[in-house]
Image 1 (cartoon, rainbow, N blue to C red):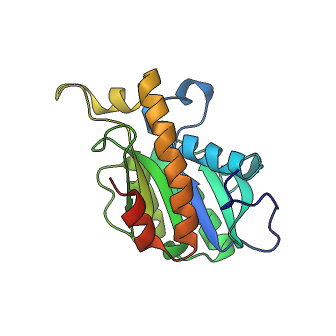
Image 2 (tube, one colour):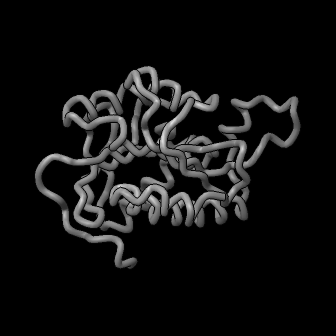
Image 3 (tube, rainbow, N blue to C red):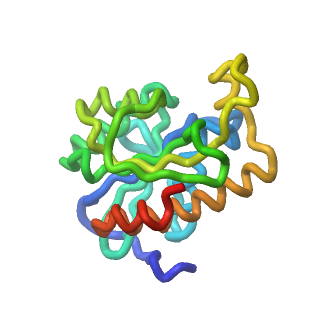
Length: 201
């Protein structure tokens, strides 16, 4: 286990929300749109916890990253309404947008690549669109995980993001998710610039 991670369960309210985006249900489990869920499961595993507490229209787990209390979330609203879960948790714990890290899939990056941004537009991603709308802010830091571009321009985007990964693509995505876990630790430590320098593709 990496020395970055600690297994203890934190007490008190979380300082950060870390949100992996995806769609709930077995049929979506290893689809491209669920890259954020894969990240969240990996981060939970590294911290020896299960994401199984039902609250805020999400399943959640409390984790401690380098002494920072975080609520790890997988919204269960389906992608297009992800913002409802984020807004409810942020409102309850009074967490500002700058302390909400969103991890999601990006078709503009190849599988295995990732990109960190401090803030910005939704980039055409419906999950981010919902979060920005519900939070009335675009100041959420985000980690984008590459899922590859559509195989040809006529391919329906919805069909592509809901398609399954090939084995080599899934292996590459898992490598990127490993890096995203390390990046999240740096980001909660206030070292976003270092995370961007280390991991941006």
